[in-house]
Image (cartoon, rainbow, N blue to C red; front, side, top):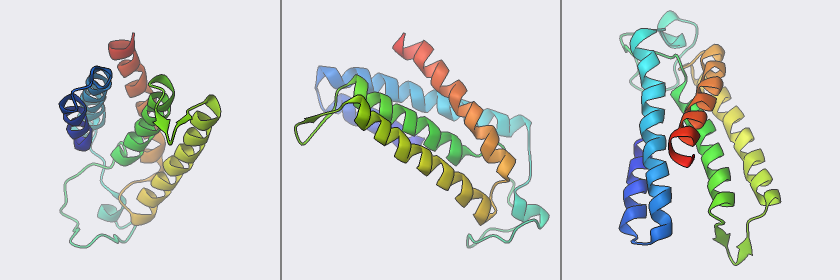
Length: 156
């Protein structure tokens, strides 16, 4: 999430008017994504699988005293929103790659690779033992809420 703020500053610093709109959208996306993924963790605390001996952690230095919540899976929510934004940005802002105009077919290909990335991120979080499968599933509708809020607040 934090990297999005750096991108928004980079877009503004580039000094091109067409990038200012993208910078504003990215800044709002970062803010809303932060709020939607962190606020539930303050009110609904759920131990991670390795806290309750349901998984052995593969991450070095993690212990049972780590007080972080697994609900929702922030990584799955983030990658879902990033896939949406990259697909939308490629088409809406008509980003050119090697003088090839982006078409709906290209956007569909970006989205298809993105869906695979979402699935692999969810599987990885569960396999490493830092999230339950339900945490990853809960993150998907949360990501839809984030996208709808960003579209309503910024785009419309």
